[in-house]
Image (cartoon, rainbow, N blue to C red; front, side, top):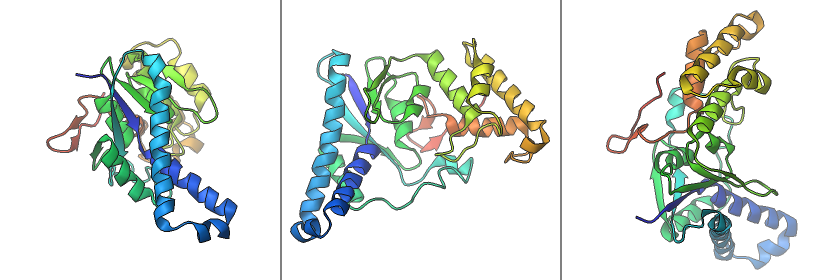
Amino acid sequence: MLPRIFVDADGPAFMACVAYEKDVLLWGNFVREQSEVERRLAVCKAKAVDIINTWVDMLTPIRAAGTAKVILCFTGPDNFRTKILPEYKANRAAEKPDHYTEVVSHLKQSYSYIEASVLEADDLLGIYGSSPDDWIISPDKDMKTLAANFFHIRKAKEPDVYPADQERADYWWMHQTITGDSVDGYKGAPGAGTKAADNALRGLTNLSEMWTAVTQVYETQYHKYKQREKFVTHSAYTEALMNARCARILRPGDYNENTGEVKLWTP
């Protein structure tokens, strides 16, 4: 079987459409008068394909492993995390840019792809892209929480390369469980930021030790009156587990393809 490159395709589709919207605003009536809907759509489709192909080409010299199969991953219409925390990604704009749906359809016709109704593209990368010969490409730093070969696309900077490493994956997952992610809508341990996470996890090498350290941070914050009132679940351990489940990008074994059910992580 060929090595595979799994690409977070939500980003290229979105970026291609947003980039064109900016061009329209820049050129104003000239573009609106000179460009029919079909031409605008064609530009967005071509831009999305170009972004994906550029990412793959950037990875090629690093892989140094010959031909690989490119597989795109798309976020489904539902998200299992909203059953854990209803506020999960509630602050994200629901409206997509013009032509987004059509561009996604075009990408699905142009490449092999995976999509599951209750999963994010991130989860699909984690479930299917963790084999030793495979790579994942994404602009999302959260992929550091996976024991997978990760090519991290960064805006206006050289990409970062992270070879698969289980200890690193668990560290960043537990680190994010403490700090939370305001963009995704889960807050972590109230009042505990990056410094608290660094201190709690320093020198730890296995997940069991890390989880114990995480729960201790939550217990400490829970016993501070001004922080306790910020807890969603009114329990230090339950709050820690809720955040850990939101922060966990799914891994092999976390999802049943036949039933569409997610196996939530349990310590």
